Length: 255
Image 1 (cartoon, rainbow, N blue to C red):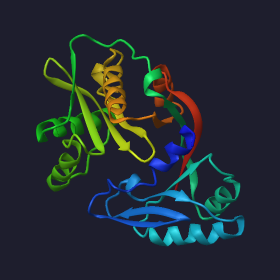
Image 2 (image 1 turned 30 degrees about the vertical axis):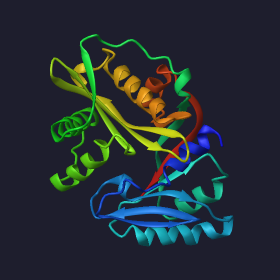
Image 3 (image 1 turned 90 degrees about the vertical axis):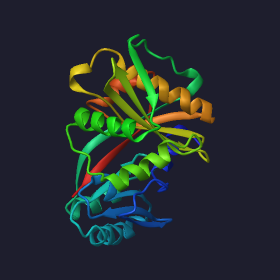
């Protein structure tokens, strides 16, 4: 199985789903819904159907996403023309387009970063709060997780044998960059997510340090590939400079 197929399959594993999200998981459909207005919690991550069956499946998802928000991941791992036609007819439209990018850990060449930056793997509630704060500032959107959810996340990312790991970069004690790594042992794949740097600290090599820490951690776990879906116009060029090769594409269709 190539890196593009492994990358798509990382989205089919719902081990990380919070307590307030509902799951549908069967061969032709994997989907989440949640009352919180969070796109990745109201999302289809796997869909397969014959050309004639797509309208019915799209209608089912429209009803399932009863809270209104609905996102559909459309990768280039199969012929998506009939799916896209059914989505368009149901009021969906393409929004964000991503490049699928991946690299083998041993082939990753870390870019130089600042000597005064320290990257820590999250192991305490204070570090997790710092990670969440950096992500919110980097992406310009609030985090909707409550204290109960944060403590649940901490249980995952503070476990050395766990599958979710988060990292925070500090400069003179101030958190300025962060990123997540999810581990998929059956796929031997490390999925990078939510990597970002606060606006005042960009362009200084801090993000490179966070990427390097995640790659090294994934290598230690036994990863054969590390990858991510990167927005074509923003994060994809940044990830490309980190040595991640383009192996495919994926688009969000949203209603």
